[in-house]
Image (cartoon, rainbow, N blue to C red):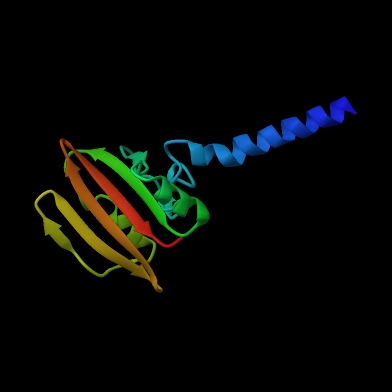
Length: 133
């Protein structure tokens, strides 16, 4: 009987490690590492994935599937760096708004509306893509 309990505990630990670990880590919002927008396209070289850290509530919304966000940082100021993969995947760019140090666009594909926002942070660009899962 103790071997069965041990196997069960190991199985539970393996499940937690495989599933729950993502929600505890810094990259909780990246569902499929190495890809853009959960498999839309391979992640272009030079981009570093990040997730918002400012709110526990936001992390919970992503976990529950209410919201979705992916963030990427790259050196220099390249606000439109990730638009082409979305366009190749069939997203239509609806807006193109540039301000000093900021860039925003809305993308649409069959009613799937995404917000694309780039911000200059020092010598880097932080790009955030958000929408409904």
